[in-house]
Image (cartoon, rainbow, N blue to C red; front, side, top):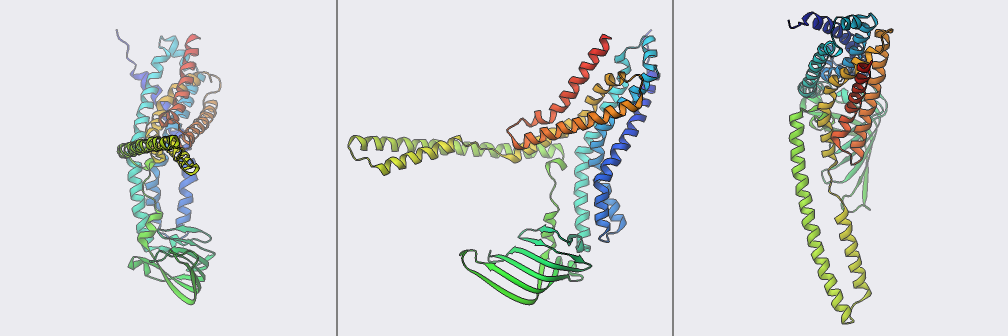
Length: 426
């Protein structure tokens, strides 16, 4: 008769699920306290309503949940297998004729399910949360412009940079503004103090009333000419639509994999056009260079060649060689490729981690959950370090984006296979 393993699957799966939930709460609250509480405190200090703060936190949760799942799957699997091994339950199952591979099945299935959930959270809910976060922040900004006026800060807008001094209530001291006028002249404005005009945001602008103003303007056409002026008061307006630039649009990490893939295809097509244009340009320059060489050779035979023409010919050859050897690259394309591979490699790490955790957990027979938890933290830090290192290499060097994001998974998978082989030999 064919054996049925429903009781075994439920028992092992329940043990792994419990350990996973404990581990998930641990990692979740670490990331939560590290990121979201600081954001909430910063916004609450500016008198933003509590319901809006809660919504901002909710919209930020998908990123934390997505990154917590892989590490929780690793630590949870180590704790669960360690507990079963320390209580000799694995040994009892083996004595009943159940192999390690069959015991591993429910853990693998749950790890695969966690991978799918992490991918969905990262690929759908993270972009959705980012869009809603930006919309809500814009709404709060329209009703509470003080959100942007922080003490001792530098704010970048479309055509201006604002440097603030101390801020007390509605008053800013020692304000410096660098901007560009309508005539494209560079301008520096300093004010002893500035105050926010009430209800100015209703008109779609933030109006600042500047006191004791000094303005210096440099002519855009003639850099050696400048003008300056002084005033007791000045009204300076900033469009809220310009401030929305500080709320950056979704990056590749905050977009769905389909959208990132479309952007990659578009950039690859543009890069091919640039390379074809360069190839044609270099070919035309090579033709002109050959013509110049032929003309110089003819002049040399006729005794009419000059030192200046030889220098011009040498400079033309050097310029052509430099342009030919200069590669046409798009760094943003490399970034998008890295983030595209990251969207799959990090969620899929849930499966890789359980492949490693099962044989590693069997080695902690006498220690149970505690050693499994410690090993899981160590492997999590190691994995995160490899991921950051691969991402840095992909950003700064001509390094394969796929390899930079998948190499940590391959290293952990290789370690798991080796441990499995060692365990089976025993």
